[in-house]
Image (cartoon, rainbow, N blue to C red; front, side, top):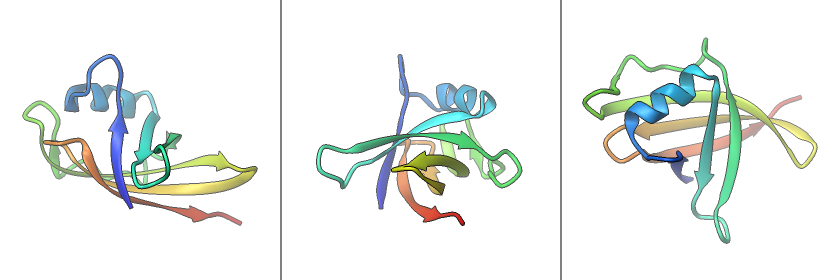
Length: 95
């Protein structure tokens, strides 16, 4: 599903890097009615940042994290282009 990273006060790759280091990122699923913003607890071990350059704002990173959604624990997988801070993502129900 199409996603975009929710960042305040500024939407930059360096701001995203800070949020990742704080272990919490907002991801917006843009193809839902009105958009759905979810707060993701980042799994640092499963997340892959090596293909991205946060200072240059280039490359692609892979975020993995968990959250509660409608009283169910789910895992979020997101591929994010650092140039646009948009990408693709999906949720997986955990047991």
